[in-house]
Length: 274
Image 1 (tube, rainbow, N blue to C red):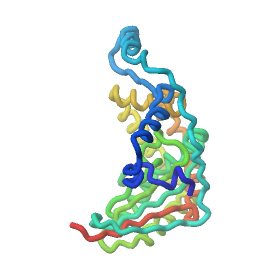
Image 2 (image 1 turned 120 degrees about the vertical axis):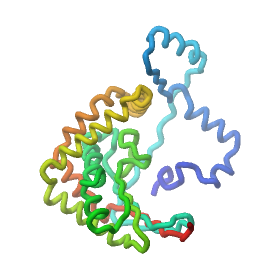
Image 3 (image 1 turned 90 degrees about the vertical axis):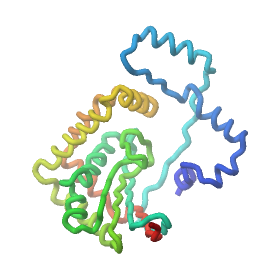
Image 4 (image 1 turned 30 degrees about the horizontal axis):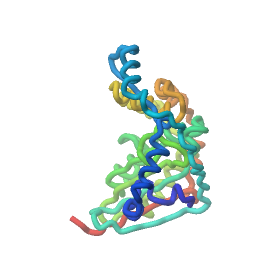
């Protein structure tokens, strides 16, 4: 509902076409300041040589402070919000639902169980919602879940959300899909996880974290993000352990907060294009 979160962060054509050169220059001066940047150098390097090269290429960049970060505080929902729109290019229906989650920077311990919960619900053929909606009910053809609007749970700031999205077959029932999601989330919160379910999920998550940062470039980029957002690049090496320390009780408690009255859902109605 607040302006920073309600407008198109990518930039609508109306905004882009109305922007002036002076607007663009002011934005550049404000946000592309050296104090707002992190330089990551990776590879089989000699530190002294690399430092000298950095000095040569960057020492003449004027020092400027990082801009003050605006307040992006957003109130939580107290009643479900449902929207729909027709996409003329969509051949099939789809739906996405989202719930606010704890601050990923200031409340990292409270945020982590939601990261694990999203994986329990949607990652792999044995996950809760894939097994129910795709394999058993066949009410959706594909399903995904993740934290943050760009899909990386450790490259995000508040306010953010846990998102579940599903693609439906022709004539699919969006209301039924959302009801089934509610049923499975309630069942997890009430009955808990099956034997080995959490350990299997955490092992898969740790594998993905290690694989994604195995390449030198991938590791450097992720450490730069953690430095820029948290001032804590070494967190990268702790993530597999921290994910593994999330308990079943924490996952169940997180699931219990995914109530319909806290959900925003958007239905995509296919326009029939081929």
